[in-house]
Image 1: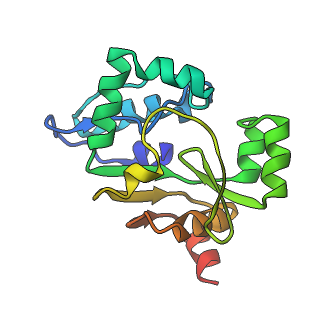
Image 2 (image 1 turned 120 degrees about the vertical axis):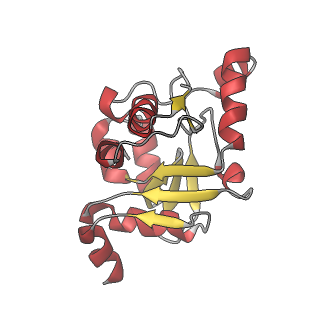
Image 3 (image 1 turned 180 degrees about the vertical axis):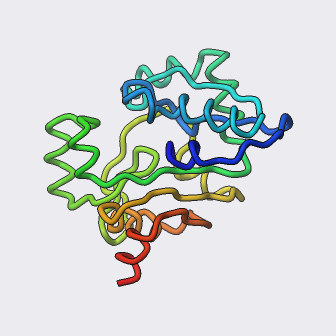
Length: 185
């Protein structure tokens, strides 16, 4: 998704509002949801709102944050979005980046997770085998008349792309030749 943002052709769309799908603090700055949202808005000449919260948090903290007026307003806007762009990650990449704790990594391996989107982890059949608590949009929100675009590239993500796509909520896939060829084969 960060690569797509960098490749956008500048436009003037001041009536668009760009939002992160969920919190994302804690990752490398260049791939945080807020950073990417602001970059997309800048390229499109659009406005944006940010969600200044960590991506994975306990349910207790999530409930407290949802009660915050500023956060709840952004969440409402996110859930009203007509088009959602989601990046797909493979499990090896998530573990390498340290985005899951050691016990979660072990659980994901045991449950044969291969792909992730929105904090939901999928096996090769497209079944959700684990999820992390987060604030923002969730799988149920995707099934409510939204246009959902999956974005992922690289041969190493082909299995993850297939797994997430099997869930059936995506309408469009943006990928590269390497991943596309591997999926087709």
